[in-house]
Length: 98
Image (tube, rainbow, N blue to C red; front, side, top):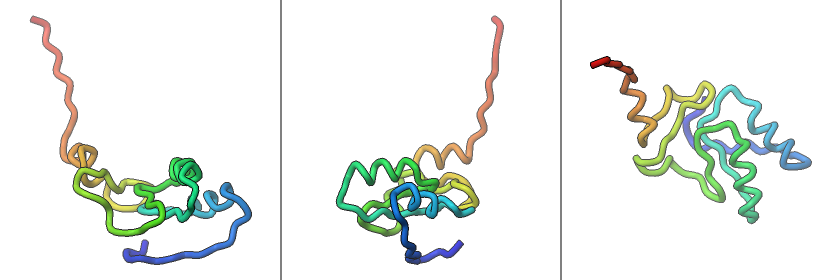
């Protein structure tokens, strides 16, 4: 997994083929979609197997409140946000009969 802005270009005949190409990776840190169609971006973002999707931009992940990571072999689990905090907790149920 390369850390840095890398552009991989490929031709595709339709959105389904583009998604198949994008998802055919053991990693899943970040993806970017470039389109002028908002509905298309929403539909494709839902189908991408990655932690973050940028639409018409690309940059370092958002603020501390936005969860990040934990897809496929990318990263070490969830980071940032409430989901990141959960990485440092352990759930336990304790039942009492009084």
